Image (tube, rainbow, N blue to C red; front, top):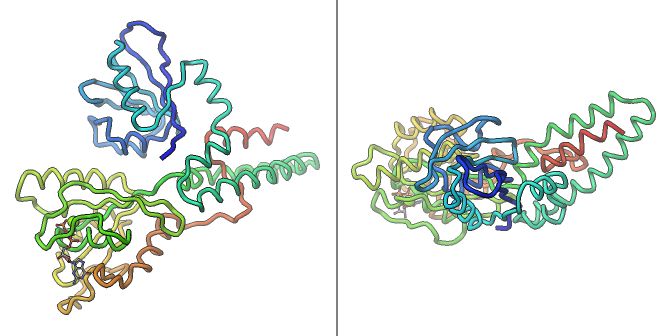
Length: 353
Ligand SMILES: Nc1nc2c(ncn2[C@@H]2O[C@H](COP(=O)(O)OP(=O)(O)OP(=O)(O)O)[C@@H](O)[C@H]2O)c(=O)[nH]1
Ligand SMILES: [Mg+2]
């Protein structure tokens, strides 16, 4: 995928104690690339601005700081090798290097162009959304100017504030949503992902414990790009590889935008499913294998969607339910939504005309 991410070395050339690398990219880049191993349990995606955490980048000790919504800094040992390693790793994930502080500052001021934003999205509906914002912004700027000119300062301010309140939504619309399927082994998680993708990607097997690593696939649902993560069945693991898979599953769950708990209608493990639901109350509960003649009628948890990965029953309803969970509110089509930190500062400046 094309990204707008850049990295700049903020410390001067030569050997120093510590080097500072400033990355203009959302934190999800680090999470997806799995380059940084945090020493804490904190969720990188929701890390507070200004928060510093320690971790490792391969063999290197590193300090990570979230600077704002769109930037983070990496502080590593000042020698050239650690810096090169980090820069090379990030370049391999589509990040481009700007030549230094000057280039970084210029890039900051302008922010990505509309063309760059368009190039970075992956679905047609996202592209339409970006273009709509370009039009809406022109409209809003004119309205705000007119209100200010006629002395209606409070109305102008209210419009700008309403726009600002949509910033988080705007950023979410530009990125892939992470959806994780979890549940006991053999409930049909991999089969459901295959059903949603429409082709056989995940490995399905009758023996419990088939999926040991996290397998991800991207699909467009109702125009939203969605990354589906298939995970190892959660249970008290009985061998080491599976235990590793289970701990990765838990890590993935903390970073998910939505979680689907899958229950086998013919052989429900209510206790494990209840435990996951208690830990992640927003999770959607899916009863799978409803085609099975031995499906239970004794439901011990409230079921959100009933499906059969085998016959395809309920998959359309599952898609709708999922996209409603990810995007429960929809702005009016004429609402201007800032998409980048630069848009936010430009929007605020409308009031200074
Ligand atoms: N009857 C019926 N069988 C299904 C359905 N979905 C999955 N199965 C079967 O259930 C078994 C397990 O399916 P998987 O998709 O591998 O289950 P899983 O949850 O990914 O299993 P692990 O990776 O081991 O945790 C396979 O034999 C599937 O064919 C369904 O809707 N109906
Ligand atoms: Mg599986």
